[in-house]
Length: 547
Image (cartoon, rainbow, N blue to C red):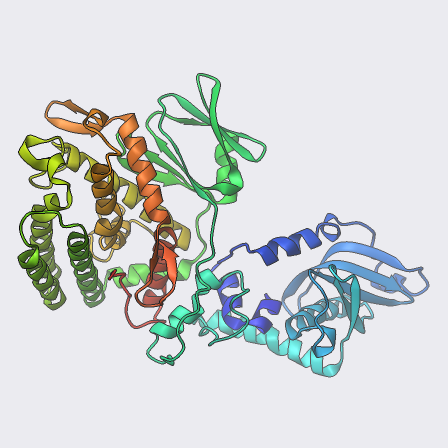
């Protein structure tokens, strides 16, 4: 952490105080470079026994200093002729600047030297060993470096005790290679801050690609087990399919699906959530490990949820974004014989009324009016041959619990998938998904997930429903009717899930930041931006409104 503070105080705060962490190619490579010294080996003699000894090596030694209040695991310690030398392994090659060592690495090495001194050892220098180049760089522990190290230690403690996250670096070359850039969002925060320089547009660095995708299991009586690095799905003890654990972002279980205890433990250890649904898709909840450590974020969330002004300001922007995105979806997909001009004007007026609402009750009325207007126009997005004259996808109005026609069945299932995705995303970022700012708390209802999904209902869920109908991905045979309710069959659910996941992978140009980002990554970004708003780093939560 002292190394991270010397590199970037904000990075150290995110990792140490807020408990953030993310792997990158550099961190994985660094772990690989340390694999030998991490195994341990050798013996470090007591401080008084190093005088006449031959050269000794001790690997992976953990020591601490009460004076400094620090603990360090040292990669390698060499002892000879009464002196000890800490050796710190670094991936890559020696930099050809600053004497072959950057300041954070010199400070980190000096911390090890100071701890060794406090343990009674004679330690005058350290060594940085660069694995790729197989080079050793000597680092003398002179007075200047010791002073800089002690300043870094006290600075880190001060920042942590004050409880105020340091501002992000501005246009820094350090940010693109930082493993936490997609969490820190330095360019985005600076862009949204009132103190930012508008000429600095965000660089497209906060959206690293990922190959991890959800694994859906809905076969009745299926079992999910672990075999090495794979998840194995079987039905009646016959293997059906498998998925690699490193390529799995979450496991979605629908109906009576069994997960073995070793498998569940492995998923929790890796931070892969398991979400539970009824066979028809109703979201029950999710299982994860210990959860996120960011207490600061949840404290800010709870504080804001009890502030009526904050809730109203947040909710007005949320409803306005939902109405405007609904308007955009209608405008893009209008297939009705009549002009959409009047509906577009009415929805625009609804969005303006939402912005002027003086209370949450008034806002709820505006949202209800806008939703009714939108769903009256919803059939205009479905091809006429599929909805006219009592066709299978005829749609009159929105209804649920239970849905009474195929279109409503599709909408309900798509919304269930969306609320599940938002619940998992918010929990992964560190929020309590069940404490909202607009939707009021109710037993078992993920209110904050329902809040943030509002602007994305038309962009993701409704768009997917329109697509699967018009493209023929779902057919009348994919529904079953019982006692006046309509539900999807297993095949229909598979088709909708596939379209939903494709939609999450679809890239759009962010209207504020100007770079391309998938909806899956965008949801995480929006959750993190909400955190930055609640923690006071940006003046308002920037809702996503597509063009």
